[in-house]
Length: 561
Image (cartoon, rainbow, N blue to C red; front, side, top):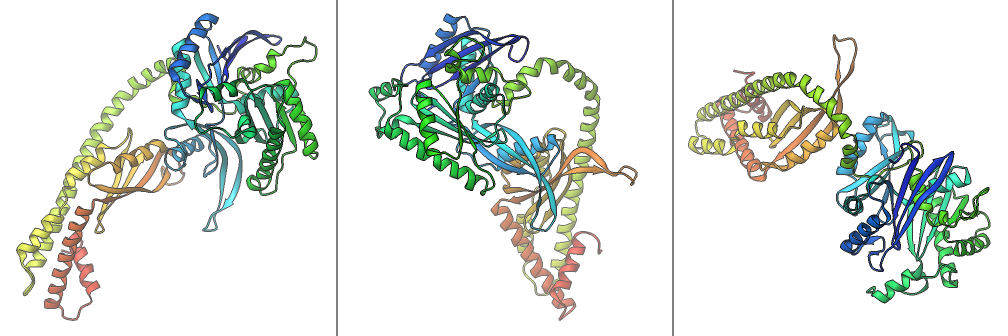
């Protein structure tokens, strides 16, 4: 298994083929098995699966032929579909940072694809001053996101063939791991240029973490690509020679690298940091050609090549260079693994057998408590429903009594119709609000304003539950919009002397009702206000309208009989 015992395996899926390598730990890591599956042109185009069925068939036959069934691998995928975002999280507790990153990715992070699979790296903390002048400590993180559809396609194809995926990472981190081990030094402000057939990947690292990735098509640098990629064009790309780069390609590559160096220094870091080392990996001939050209064009940067063909003390072996990304993926462990894009449900499956026994014990112990809590909440909900209905009935009776005192006011029948139109079925509304609550969720407070807005305070067990409840509120048929006004962790003062965390979060929601109900409520409120002004003119001529409104509100809430 990956990461256990004396064997590790890595696998890469690239445009030209699939590579598998298994390492054995015999004091040092040595290659025990390696295999390459060349893919037919057109199977993968621009690092996207163009013919899934063909890829599925080729990999299934290859796994069967090479005896790879039952293998567990660390998978490396191309970087073209991976997005990097830098974020500041208003928390320093690791668990809270993880929860807030999840909330931000699901609700606020704008990505060019839906349903992302993601991971993040904390890169430091800093204190920032808010607009109100208050200083706050935040955690800076790098978020890596990819379309879950693409990742699940890779995992599904391998799983169907009998190969289990233990982790998924981008080729940037796998290659950086391999390079760091080979050079015996970590990355600082480093650019890594990865040449592979007709493509060149450029990665830029800050303090060992990838902050920028870009893929460049080398064939397009020499000739203009056709609008429709025919089979002959794809075959030309697949057969692109590895002996040398053309003059046009060298010029374009040098210009692109210079632009990316300036982008790193001035756009990403405002001139505070610059790339001081550049490492080139790839086939030996074009790698050395590019290194020589870059040393002439970028004399101020230390430019090195990663030579894996001949390891000191061992015989020359070119396969190590061909499988450099797969080897880097296989050498992944808990200390050097930066990101894991394995979908979270798949991660849960791996630990599920160990958690089942514990969950069963917890369920048995919690069953009684859940039953008691349910009965208590059900009784409290019934009491609140009756209280709301009673208050609404009392309010309407008081308004009718005020309307009846008018000498020359409007028609009582019309007023009654307006009040009936404005009346809401409080029981039904409250039941729907309660039905959408997540597990352990409790409605702590609820209020309704004349602007047709329900203010709702809910206790939830997790931050994700607050986001889930917000989405459910928006789907209710009587809701036009819903927002979270605030979200804070609950505090328990105990006997009034000490405060501590309760494990709950208080979320305050502002729920706007549908337009028709809001208009009806406003009409009822206007009619009641007109009635109040008429009564005021009859009882106390010249009194201020605000005084009459205040008295009306005190009658409605029962404080002024």
